[in-house]
Image (cartoon, rainbow, N blue to C red; front, side, top):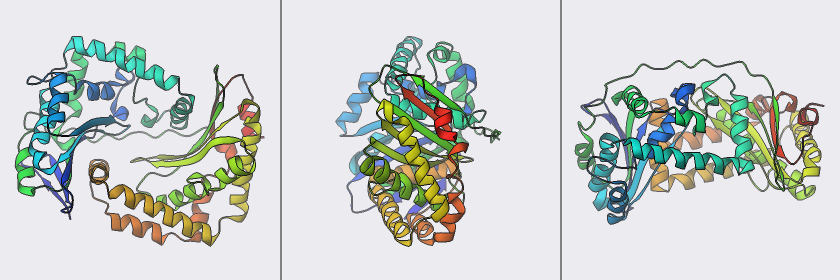
Length: 416
């Protein structure tokens, strides 16, 4: 059963008991991410996430790692466009120790200037690593283009230039302004004592600022754009994308199923056409993702340099077929089975449950149950698919990014 309560200091605690396991996953979520940054501090949320592991008043960085190992735990964190999460998974009997470590990191980190200088170098290497992986780089570039002028376009990792300009004072100000009690959600899933968990976190965040005002992010008008990145690489990487639906849009279930049909599995239309029938790509897939106020649909393919045009023609062919003939009842039934199964499988993992309840409460202020989600997919019919297919079928309205060995007329390939 999922339960939610407001602790005495205003922090929300959301829990889900699973009595048949012997583990617990604890996450501290903060509604602060890349969208909350200004250009001069681009990447500060991600830098703070890294610095939380670099030492507290009680523990060195080595001590944090050693103490987690002593309880047989797994610790990690991630920064997103809209939120940041710090989490530990461990055996149930060590829930108190796991909670204490997370609280020490969140509330006691020193943010030592010397350590910060070193960590900036580490992140600069992370930036280079992404740039050296063209399949990831084109997708990051695609998001910047699709959401140009929208806060969602902001880079999570920042740039070497923006990182250099982030001082310790700017970090402390950002923490004060963004890590407020009303922006924090503690999510716990697994086998635990509810009263003990409540006691572990009760009144622990009183020193933080109580609230921050809700932000109203201005959405920009979308215009298709194209970019070619010339690289010394052995394969061309194509990414095409268009704005789509926010996560709580009632049509999002239909779009998710359509995404599965088009490029979400080995039996999908794009996979069968581009890879199996034409032999143009090893990797080809589509993705849809929803945020609080926006979303996108994208298509990716990795092909030989001389097969870019053929691959795009294959994608356009599938989009024309979708627009003109739609899908079959069998495809819809298969997509429902696949998407529901994937979601159910993820929720059978304790960490997956914590991520689900934590994200939903942090971003949307409510819990969306497994039963609600399964029911949402079950309700989708052929008319619903016809309603959303028009959002993705016109390839001339997409943004396009291609990393390849020489300059090509990508816009022409897509729009002609």
